[in-house]
Amino acid sequence: FIILKDRSDWPDPRKPREQLVAELNKAVAEIPGNNYEFTQPVQMRMNELIAGVRSDVAIKLFGDDLDQLLKTGQAIEELVGGVEGAQDVKLEQVTGLPMLQITPDRGALARFGLNVNDVQQAVAVSIGGVQAGQMFEGDRRFPIIVRLPETIRERVDEIGRLRIPLPGSGPSVDPATGMAMDTGLRGFVPLADVAKVEVAIGPNQISREDGKRRVVVTANVRGRDLGSFIEELQAKVGTEVEVPDGYWITYGGTFEQLISAAKRLQLVVPAALLLIFGLLYMLFRSGKDAAVVFSGVPLALTGGVAALLIRGMPLSISAGVGFIALSGVAVLNGVVMLSFIKQLRENGSDLEEAIREGALTRLRPVLMTALVASLGFVPMAFNVGAGAEVQRPLATVVIGGIVSSTILTLLVLPALYRMVHGRKAKDEPPPSGAQASPLPA
Image (cartoon, rainbow, N blue to C red; front, side):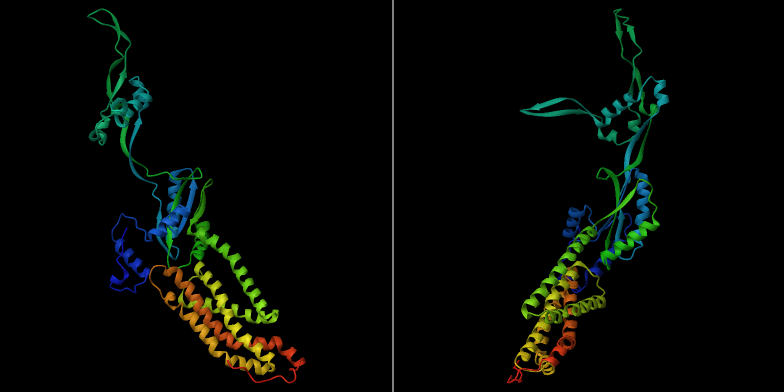
C-alpha cells in the first residue's frame, strides 16, 4: 500500500485523482514482472466483501480443465485491455507455482519387485514426515515427527538418492544357530532408479465457486461510465471469444450493485415525481395548475443532462440521485410565480395583466431562489478531494437543472398558464367592483 500525504502538502493540491493515478501507473509500469492495482482501501474491501473481487468489473470463466481455463482467460484478458476505459486489467494467476513431481517408473518397479505404494510410503515419510511418538511436558502433549532435514528436502538430487527398501527374499537359515529366520529385506534401491524426480510448474491455486472451477479476469473502469463499459464488453466477449462447450462466463463486481441500484431508482424516481405532483395538487386544488408547475421538472432535467454532457460526466447513480433532488427544487420557482399570478387574478386582474405583472414582480424572488440553491452546490461540483466521484455528478446535475429551470420558468411557465386558462378567461369576465391594482411583491 502507498499512503499519500495530506493534499495540502502536495506540490499541486488541486491535482485531480485521475491525473495522479495516471502518473503513478506510468512510474510503476517501468518495473517488469509485477502486478499493480490502483484503488482505495475501503473501496477495495467493500468490493471484495460484496462481489468477492477487489476490482470494479470481474469476468468469471467456469469450466473443468485448468489449461483450457487459462487459455480462454488469456484471450478475455487481451480483449478487455482493448476496451476504452479499462485499467488494471489482469488475469487471476492460475499456474506458476514450482512443485516437486515424482513419477514412478512402473517397469523399473516391477523389475525390483516393488509397487507404487512402496515408493509413496518412502516419499511420504521422508518429506511429509510421520509421527513416531509423543513427548509429554506436564499435562501437554507434543507429537514427535520424523522426516528428513530441510536442507535435503529442498534439493532434487538428494531426494533422488532416497533409499527405497526392497522386499525380502523369504525365510532363510541363520548359520550360527541353525534356526529359520525371515530377513524381510534384501537391500535398498535409490529413488531415482525407480522414479523420475523433477521440479515442475504446477497450478498456483484452484478457485471454485458453487462447486465449479473458475478463473477471474478483473479490471477497473476510469474515464467512462460502468454501464456502457459492461455493454461493450459483453458484446465483444460474445462475438470475439470462443468459449468451449461446458464452459460459461458470468459478470460480477461493482456492476452487480449498479444493476440493483438502477432497479431501485426505477421505483424511487416515479414515486418521487408522483409525490411532487400530489403535493402541487393539494396546494393549488387544480390539476391544470399543478401540471403547469410540474412542467418545470422536464425543463430542469434537460439542463441537468446538458451539464453532464458539457463536463463529460457519465449518467451514474449519484447523478440519478441529483435528478431526484432537482425535481423538488425545480418546482419551487413555479410555485412562487404561479401562486402570485393566482393571487392577482383573485383580486380582479385580468389574465394578461396578471401574467405580466406576476412574471415581472416575481423575477427577483425566482432568481434569488435559484442562486441560493445553485451556489450552494458549487463547492461540490468542483471538488477534487475524497468523495469527489460521488459529489461532482450530483452537484453538476442540480446546478445545470436549476439554471435551465429558472430561465425556462420565467419564459415558458407564463405562456403555458395563458394557454391553459386563456379560453376560460374570455368566457368569464372579472368580477365587478374588484380591485385591479397589483399587490406589492
